[in-house]
Image (tube, rainbow, N blue to C red; front, side):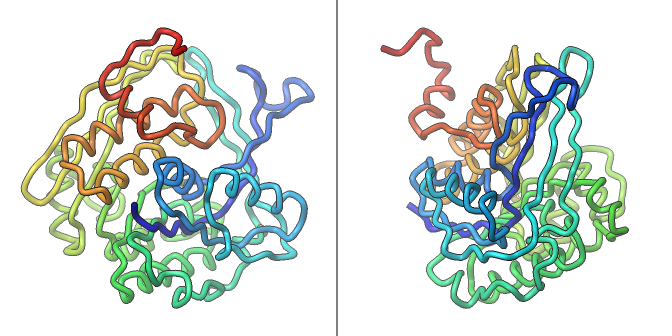
Length: 331
């Protein structure tokens, strides 16, 4: 199994219960999450040795969040503690024709305020087979953006492949007037694997494309380090009834997964991270490309059945979903 380093902000998520509007009642459900943490937990559940690098509040909230990572066998020695606050986000779940909504409360957090050179990558990266970061991290603020750029360049210098998930978050970029396309382009230039679609590519390259295929071709031309791109396609008849499929593209071939119907979605937050982790698992294990994209989409589909950010499933469970296994009670 591989050793993976994930870098990003560890968050607390507060969710309105059921299908309520935010603060409709005086209750919120709490869980731990964050894009890179979600990938870390998935890969640890798949059996990989995963280290999480971050800066977390030196208070009971930060300790509880780190404890949740450790409970999923994610190693946290590269996490630093800070007197600053935890980053938070609030989720108002959608229903029927009302989409879900997210409110961020991350300004001034321990991660956002950390120095760009806070992480000593010379001691964190040795022995790693992969480094993963998402576009959420540089969107947090100028210090985090510089930290993300330094991280991927350190991984390149150390010969560690970089995985990058586009995850464009307009609200975060707008909060500090950050030039998201320029910063994400610099990070993507260091990536070996990218989880991006035609909208991400059009944004980053400041271009328009007639098709996803044309966008992927442009990305491979613009970023010589890239060896593979993976993306999902989502159909929605309502917030609760959706379907997803995916594709994996290299410079000379393309593989498409079956469609997974998702009636009665429980929680789609973290679904993209689950997809990315599934693809990375197949790539790092040397599985063939068709297995890799089928595994990735099945992992993402299963996440829609699990409340919270983390995808709490194992390799056998994902492979059963790939095979269209029985939905009867397993006894």
